[in-house]
Length: 208
Figure (tube, rainbow, N blue to C red):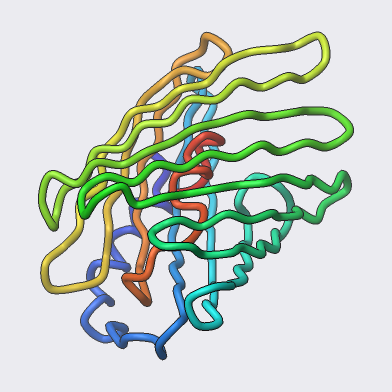
């Protein structure tokens, strides 16, 4: 297990009480660290997101290290319990896409996206079921079209929310192109408002 991510997750738990300050109304934000292993080859990541809702109809969000580029910008419309939007990831090869998410109930969230660049197209679905305020089960599935290398990816996992601090421990197992994949990490939530990409990033093994 990567020592960096283990130390980062522990630091999030210990620092939680000192950092636990609710953001102003309309904001959502989180930051964390994660270790991902595919067929025994592991890498560690630091990820961050911040978003702002302009009233109840429109919002924006910025991501760092989410799998679509060095940074990604989202814009979305809100209606009821759903968000529908588009995004662009900035890197050597920019990625554009559309996305949607919906809270079907207090316990169930579903999410999907389509993303494309000059090298790969991805169609994906993800979801979350909260058994309690502290425990949620997650799942995701994707189809990746990378020219001659088309493959599927899926994961199942769990999120554990601490009672007294806004810290979440995360983990998942699955397969990517027939190879075993697992991830473990943690994040600090500056706001309980849900970001637009909570399930989408899991499909890359990078995010939440």
